[in-house]
Picture 1 (cartoon, rainbow, N blue to C red):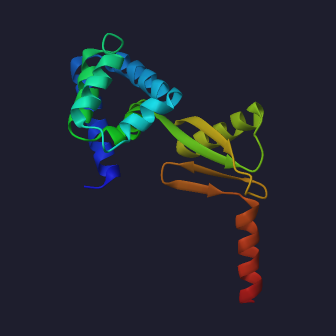
Picture 2 (cartoon, helix red, strand yellow):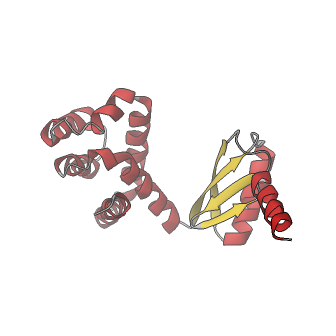
Length: 179
C-alpha cells in the first residue's frame, strides 16, 4: 500500500467519523492545532518519523501531549495512527483531512510558485482569476522559487498553469531547434 493511498484513507476515515459524531468543526480546529504543534517542534516531528521508536511509545507520547487539549475523537485518531505504525504519515494525513474538508465546503487550495514575492493585491487578483476558472473559492498558498527566471506556476488540484519564463524559453528553444 503506497503512502498517498494510506493518507487518503486515514484522512477520509477521520472526516467521516467527525461528521457522523457531529464534531467536525472541533476536530478541524484540533487538526490545525496538532499541525501547528508539529511544525513548531522539530523534536516532535523527528520523534514521529523515527522508525526505531515503538508504536506504543509514540502512542503514549501523542496521548500525553494532546490529551485534554483535543476532542476525544481526535485523540483516539492520533492513537490509532501511532498504533498502526503510521505516525510518519501523520502530517500528511492531517493536511489531507484539511483539504478534504475545504473541498466539501467548495474551497480549493492553489499552490503558486513565483520568481519574486507576490504582493497582496497580486495574490488577490490571481485568486479571483483562479476562482473564476474553477467556479470555487480559492485558498492561495504562495511561495518564492529563485530558480524561476520570471513569471509563476499555479497548481489547482491536478491542473497546472505554467506561466514561468523558464517554460516560455524552453518552448521557444524547441520551436527554433525543430524549425
